[in-house]
Structure formats: structure tokens, C-alpha cells
Length: 70
Image (cartoon, rainbow, N blue to C red; front, side, top):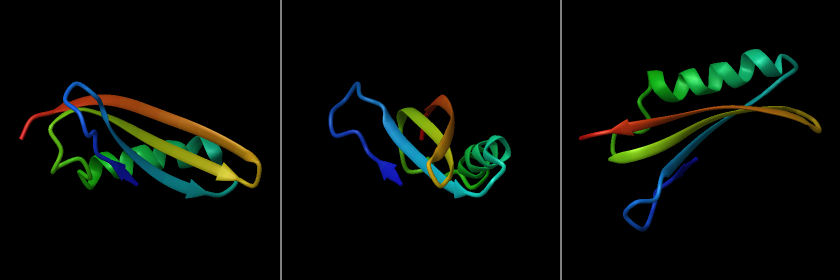
């Protein structure tokens, strides 16, 4: 999911979801996938990258803030 900020000064947000039992590994895998595939390429400015792993009712998140210049 890519949420583009509508006003200057606000951060863009990119979320990648993974499902399975290894929440720790999956959240890092999701975050790595965003960076490896450069989902943020069309965006400029501050971007919040979120890797979200879930298994039923359990959920874990990894995040990283980057600044991207086109």
C-alpha cells in the first residue's frame, strides 16, 4: 500500500504485509522487499517504510524513515 502525502511537509507511507508464523522474520522481509524493489521511487521527500507481519490476531511491525530525492 502506498499513501502519498497530499500536503508538503507530511510524510509518505508505504506498507508491505506478510502473513505467517515467523513474525520477526516476516516483518523484516517485508521491510527489505520495499527497499529492494524501490517502491518509493516515484516519491520525493520523507517516506515511512512499514513492514507488517501478522498471524491471525498477532501482529508485529518494523519501520524505517528515509528521505528520497528524485
